[in-house]
Length: 256
Image 1 (cartoon, rainbow, N blue to C red):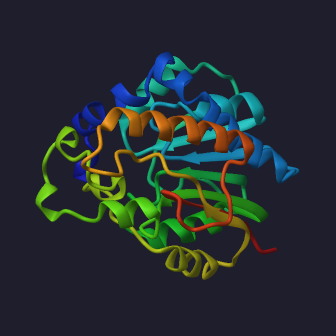
Image 2 (spheres, rainbow, N blue to C red):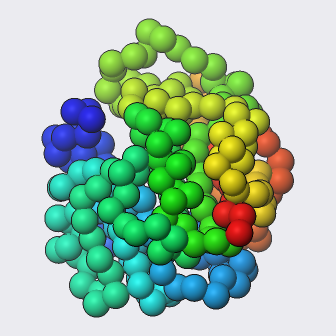
């Protein structure tokens, strides 16, 4: 896990997602996730967020649920959360998805957004999710979708490996990050998760936001169109049951 030292976290994520400005720009997205969770009408209020980062989603979870655990592999991320978030019902700690520090059948909802593609031992992480969830508990995941139209349009460019992100704009986001260890087709995600006694409540994908998609067109208008469309579609529905959006999104329930 040496890739996730504090320097890595500072360089790639802190400037993007920490602080009020970045948080407010994506507030509509976090609220859409909450609406989707709230529609499930789960009786419990004990939530675990795996891979909380600097806490942009954590804040919304803490405002809406009675008891929230948030973990991250990065001590720097947890320190930022502790500095910025002061909710009494929020409990933060450094931990791995493959070794969750919680008792069996103690969690109502696991929120794993943009995290399972990073874990080194995916089978152990899914087994741990099953272990700590209560019967009928919910596992909410979002991971890059290599079946997306964006992935097909942009292709994979091995020559970009190791270059900074600023030089990789025309590569699909799922392959930009060298720490994405699990880029799997939707069918494989389903089979892996269902193996651990889950059932699908709803799954599908989001929309197209990974601009630019066309290398010979200027980047700015592509960015603008994608951002506008993403906001419109996200406000209508967070995701739909098609398979061509950039992220695979799945809501699974642990069988009782």
